[in-house]
Amino acid sequence: MKYHIHTYGCQMNVRESEAVAALLEAAGHVRAAGEAEAEILIVNSCTVRDMAERKAIGKCGNLCALKRDGRNWKGLPIVGLIGCAVTRLGEKVFDQLPHLDFAVGSRRYGLIPALVNRAAMGETRMLEISGPDEIPTGLDAHPQGLPAEGAPDVNFQAFVTILLGCDNRCSYCIVPDVRGHEYSRPAREVVEEVRGLVGRGVKEVCLLGQSVLRYGLRNKAWTADDAPSPGGYTEAFPRLLESLAAIPGLERIRFTSAHPKGCTDELVRAYREFPQVCRHLHLPVQSGSDRVLAEMGRHYTRAEYLAAVTKLRAFDPEFAVTTDVIVGYPGETTEDFEATRSLMDEAGFDNAFVFKYSPRPGTRSAALPDDVSTAEKERRDQVLLADQEVRGQARNEKLVGTVREVLVEGPSPRNPARWSGRDSGNRIVVFTPCEGIIKGQRVQVKITSARPQTLLGELA
Ligand code: 5AD
Ligand code: SF4
Image 1 (cartoon, rainbow, N blue to C red):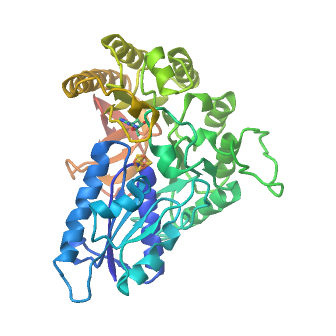
Image 2: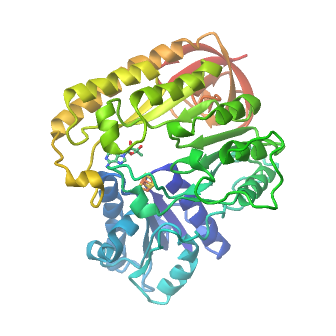
Image 3: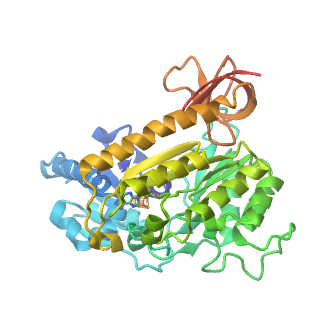
């Protein structure tokens, strides 16, 4: 049958949708050219904010309506909802979506091909939700033939999940409830997966986890059979970087997201020793007010956060730091907000994502009054975005005249006469001329001008 997957949410979801696609293909299904011709329709949902969940459920409702109208005498399409919203809602998902065939929470995606078969036999309203400590199934599946060895136009980038779940329990965040306890995949499994991807033409991997720098801290990532670190690394995450950097043909290693506690000397040593490790860290700060940070349960102060940024920039002033910020947390005063503003200036973020606080059922902060008005949240959001435009422009202008190493991603979406790629700091670099350039090629670009979120230049 032909399948189509709609994905909402973070990169972890993007990766998991890809794994589900690979599992369906292994079971003989094929990717549909579009939603209209698909016989299996899957929505991968997010629940981090109320709006995100509504979008996914709304989309799924529209797809279920297709089914109810009996588009096909065989009862097709089969409609499934997967991801974070499923775990949050449990059985209640069928109150909202009575015509849903199956609903699967994270860590049980290996069951999806079997559920599709059962749905094809007429079964409906099947629910699969894991316990918080379950070992996941299906996570290491990658679509066959997507990166094809030797092909000139391969997909040279791949996501690899290394850490599942989260135990941080920040007051506002629903992720620990829907993605379970922290679990680090065994290092050997991760290294083998990356080796396999490189064999199929992948040049850049992005390691994923809610808090990747905690890799190997809760459960053992390394076993007695694994060789000791040749570089003498004792911390699990830098040691994983060391193992991956030893894979020939792997040109770039990225990872996301991070917590300042993980910005250790060993991490900085790994950045310094392995040129493949990209000089960019996504380091969500959430707030610049010590009072709010403490309420959120972030386990760092403003000063500790800034010290982590200083440490990264001390060894490379061009090191790119990006962040997430929440505006309108319960009780956030204008003073707290101004503290966030000034922290963002001090940190000199290269990019920032701003989110308006949204209470999530069952989290600690949901018990507090959501007392910052929608209009005020909107105002704070706009102020931070405007600040970031100015800051991004200033930071990027400092790079005019430099030569950046760029891994080419393809024609620029805005103007296909120019091509674009990213530098080590994850900055988008748009360049000309592009005759004879191919995707995945490494080029040197001399930067001639800057925009807040883009660098422009010419092939050097
Ligand atoms: N409300 C608003 N933003 C949130 N985030 C997480 N939970 C909430 C919430 N309840 C934001 C954080 C996180 C990003 C992925 O989403 O900034 O880093
Ligand atoms: Fe959304 Fe968080 Fe789930 Fe990612 S982990 S899909 S951001 S709820």
